[in-house]
Length: 280
Figure 1 (cartoon, rainbow, N blue to C red):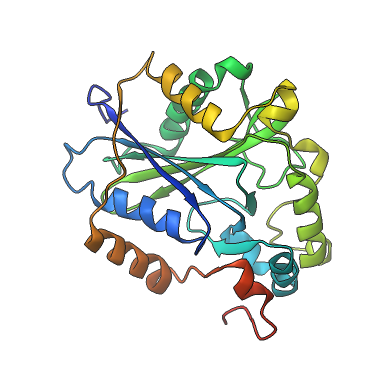
Figure 2 (tube, helix red, strand yellow):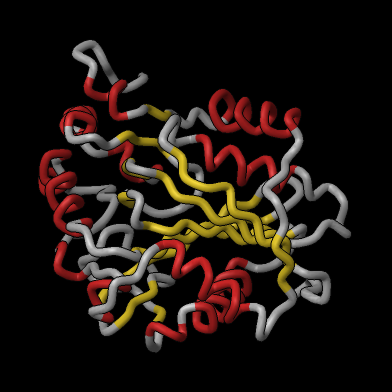
């Protein structure tokens, strides 16, 4: 790998979001833009969004996407079209999101995935042995799914920016029917009607689990944050720091994601409005 980990990761927690689902992604983008200086420290950014569907580009081709989003808006879910790879992922207050940001745009995709897999293997070892590899039938299935006792508890996606690389992942902490939510979403959105360009081949909600459900112990998002920090620090330099990013970088990131990359974002209230429609 071409970056040095002798300089400590800045460990930043920006809390829980309930406004625009794009907001935490804007913060990741702004943090990466702040890595213009190659001496910038790498960052581990933690956040929670309660609650929304984080769509992948592939999901935009679903024939009844608008109807599905309207239905989920009525059930209290917002939505956002994200810029990193993969397909739809449901987020809620029991899902911990972690972004690993490096001041390096040359690291290979596989090397970055492998490094973060090492971080997770160490960070989650108190809950059991984490396996990496596609969990067939799960939502947003891919090579870097990670599972516990054979059930998917999270996945990873990458994004390159001009100054830094971002790997975003989510960890299902408490037990909620996320697999069933995604079965219903893809049923309403018309996955089975598609012959080509399907965002996922199929969906089986029973393939998805959580740390709480699979360990049969009451585990909270705060518990996982604390365990991740304490165990990762045994192997890599990590320094907790307050979340800080410049206002101009936030404005530029918002403009870039919304206007240039055309990412849409709606709260549950907006989706449930009678006159809401997907943008053309």
